Length: 194
Image (cartoon, rainbow, N blue to C red; front, side, top):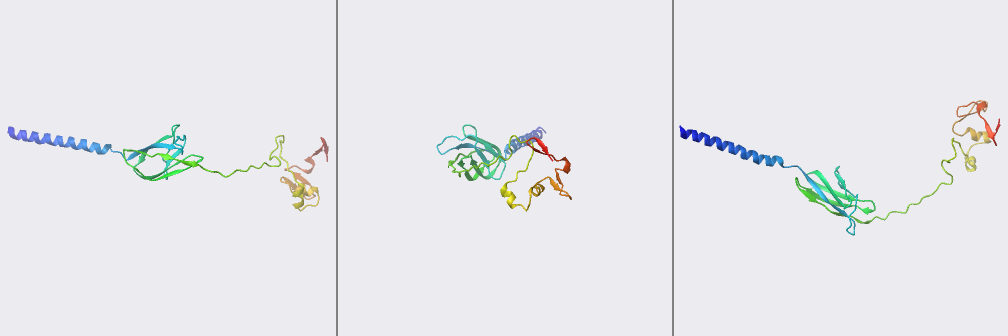
């Protein structure tokens, strides 16, 4: 009987040992991740670092800005093959195609941006008259002589009647901004003229 007990104990010990070994091996598989990391630098043509350059994986939301030393990193990138782009205003962007990201590994991807981009000249033209004068506190319509030549009018009242906010009544009374004809006052040199 003691021999059988020893055999049973030995079998039980081997089973426990096998379970322990399998669980340690499986825990190694469970610990493996599915994401990787990308790091690197962005330099100008002279080899100087470019601060605040954009580095991003094309077609995803993964992106980073370089620090003052031109270095960047992007964490938790799903394993796979991607295209990456680095860009900064004034330089031609640089595209790297087919970058392979492996799980639980750090990939180094360094970029060197090509020389400055030549931009077209910008012409700024100032308006002849200011759009809104600073001393004007109410709106007003200004009709120039060129505009009067193009209008279908015979006298000055017809010009006023064509302005926004003016309605001409049955008796050719003009109602300006909803006011009646006797409410409108015209001042000439500070004196009311009716």
